[in-house]
Image (cartoon, rainbow over all chains, first blue to last red; front, side, top):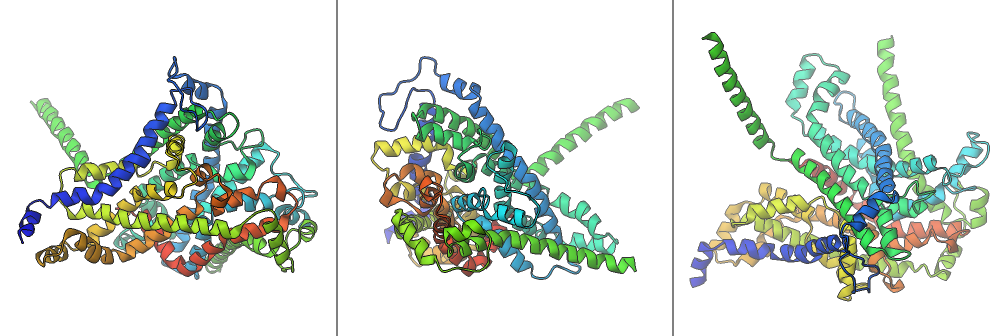
Length: 328
Length: 280
């Protein structure tokens, strides 16, 4: 019976206790590997079994190497380029579908079915999708070539895996194909979250569908659009399964993304753990910057508004003072 | 006249686009299913067909010959995914409970930290992670893939949002007055009330773990430990160069469980995706 009193007084200790598993796991499996990776970036470590590594005499040599030898920088540009090639069509299509799926007047029938179908590729293993598309884009007798030739669009089979631009577009297309359904569902739920009174008011004022979309839906979706943009960018920077399995980073490194580069450095050939670690840390910083942006976008809106108001008030106050002086 | 026709044309256009996208989403999988029953010769002469053939068992035999052991992959993936799901859901709920139900000094700092690491993917620290696991002999050990999921920031974030809106503190207080210990309160009162949110998160944790390629591929080098995605990645190798039918069948085998999950739970999955997007 004595325990009850103690509990009542120091409830806080359970807060620590319940979050302990998370904290311990985080320290061991996340924080320590992060620090370890950062450290390896400054060393001459090669191979997993090698415990005799040293900090380099010139500690930043690995970073200099990966940032100047071209392959890694090109890999980052490839990653961003492929991401942009997939994201612009993806967000455009998702917006159009969102507009169609959220109109009240004369709505599309079978929306539930379409949503289920469009989202489906997103749930399938990326590795499977990569190999599946490798088979589909096969040369000379893959299904897509079969379709293009027998329907008369092409005269003879086209090898999608030889041309740099074509291979980038196919990787971007696969990414687009797996993600547009997801983006659409997020945007639809964002639109459904907008206060219906605003739409009603617009309706009464006689706004048409296009006006409603550009004047009400789009401005109200701004936060969610930004969130989608940045999370998609982080995901895009992490692209690995599809470019690695579909074309192995080729042809001529056209689809060599940052993660493919890191994987190849560390786990093939001469196991340059140090260079891979340095490259990882560069990516880590880039992703941290992106995630800071998310943090900034998603931060407590009211607090931000409050700050803004205060600033405006201050401005107004100083202006008033100036104005008052002028009158004098 | 034009005013009446135009909306109808527009509507037809909308349906046409939706139907086109539906075909685009389904056709690759349909080709995969059909081609898994056809022989390599048949596929080579005509890669697209909607008529199944009779070489299914034949393709299966080819796969088995080439040591594509679907059963092993399935069980390994299942063990890891179930372990990850259980750890993620249970401990994330527990962590969220610690943040929501108790007033402790570092609570806000702790939550801010979770928000900060929310977006950082495990792949960027994989080099240090792998070397660490290697040095303590945990490569080829499923625990190395399961245990880290005890700390799943995004799930904690989601559970916290859900708890704030649907876990009445009065009930916890009354249980306390009735003399229930804090662990009992969590396990027998809070946990059952979180079931809907836990179910959604469980689906996503399971699917994500099932689909994970990067870390398992690095950590698991023993063939008997391969997961489904690793087995799939082998299908692009040279030994399958001319075995088209077998490749399609291998792909089909790896996605069957996902298809099953999706067709049974698509409603909840889509609702879950929608919830994840509106973080307010």
